[in-house]
Structures are given as structure tokens and as C-alpha cells.
Image (cartoon, rainbow, N blue to C red; front, top):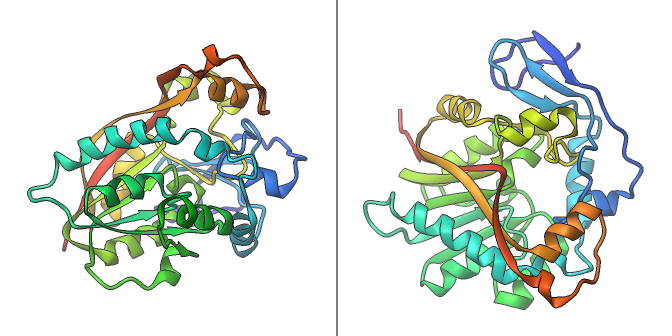
Length: 291
């Protein structure tokens, strides 16, 4: 297998799961609410450090363009605003307990339509966000008056040691090189600043049971972590793990059913019941370590 591990540099790489083709249009596959579950390229695993990633068959620059062009024309993401706010409220309460003094500046990487940043803006924090999708950036401004940077984190050119907290909710798995992004995050974080990462858990029961058909094996996901492998990856980039827990998400029952069916469906009001479930994701909190 002609590939090299991006974490440890080993060429001892094996095939974990063979590719599964997708014939859906690009615009649908890179949407924030895409449902291309179980569709993926070859899934590879490093025999030395156990990092797992997808064989990248598309040019990273073209993938960035695809994200920029993606849109949620059905407004499915914002239709779950109240439910997403409940999810983010839980995360914020958990994060806040780990600060010695109240944070002032927060950066959300992959901010989508800005629901999380809006919650913090309402609390008086100075918020910034980066988002590749032009559509999501526009909706963040229309809905919440947020001026997100439309582009990559590196292109935003934030000052050194600027933010008290950086968050990435279900974002790190999308990067073609997450370790490059982590170096940039470390640069913009202040001394002892915190980093929150929420991502699918490769070590979860659902991943172990579903194997190659796991719903988080998706074309847009390029790297996969367990709690232990994420801890090891972040330690190598100068972060220490403070805490980790299941990332429970709240959605309406109708949303869960629509995702399971792969299409939006009109259902009776009884299906608007909000449900919180552990779906095999986790969130981990890290502190920047200056060496």
C-alpha cells in the first residue's frame, strides 16, 4: 500500500476497509447535512501508531472549492436550531468549568451557520469564526449578524496568542491534513488556552459493530479518531487532554428519521419530539502546552 502515515511517518500502512463508490452529485455530498453514510474511499490504518484515515482520491484544493460551493437549500441545518442550541449549551457548560477565569475571545473553526457562536455572543464574549461554505457564511450573517471569515483558518491570518478558546465541532475529520490545522490553532491560542474537539468515535460500540458500514465512514470524512488516538495526536502537536466524554446530540425525531431514510419527509407533529442520543461521537478538551 503506497501511503505514509501523516502522524508518525511510517510506511507500514494496511487496508482496513475497501472503498464503496458514491454516485451522488458533489453539491449534495459536501453539504453540512449530507447523508452519504457508508460511502467512502479505501480506509487505511497505520500499523505503528494505529491512526486511521481515508485514501484521498480528490485534490485538496478542489475539495475546498466543493465545500465553498456547498449549500443547505432545504434549510435543514437551521430547522434544528433549538435542538442544536441545546447540544451546544451542554458543551459550553462543560467547557466553562475548565477555565480558571472567564474566557473573552472564542474562535469556532467550521462555524457553519453560527449557532454556537451566537450563543456565546449573547453572553457577551468576543466571537470569531471561519467557514468554507459561502452559503453558511451568508446565513450566519442573515440570522445572527455574525461576520464569519469565508475561507480556511490559515487564510484568516489571526494574530498569535489571540484566543482563549478554539472549538471544532465535527470538523477535524474533514481536514485533508488535520495536523497542519492543529499547528495553526496552537499559534492563535494564548498560553494555556483551551481547544475543544468533537468528532466521531472510532472506538465506539457503533463503529465496532457496524464495521465498514459505520455511518461515520463518509466521503467527506478523511481522518478517524478514538479517544486514545486523538489524545496521542494532540500530544504530538503540543496539547494535553484535560477531559473527554460522549458528545450527545439533540434533534427532533423527524430529523433522525429523515437522515435514516436519506431524504426529507413530512411527518405528523408527534414526530417533532426532541430526543437526545449518544450516537458514537465524543468531545475532548485540551490545553495548549508551551514547550
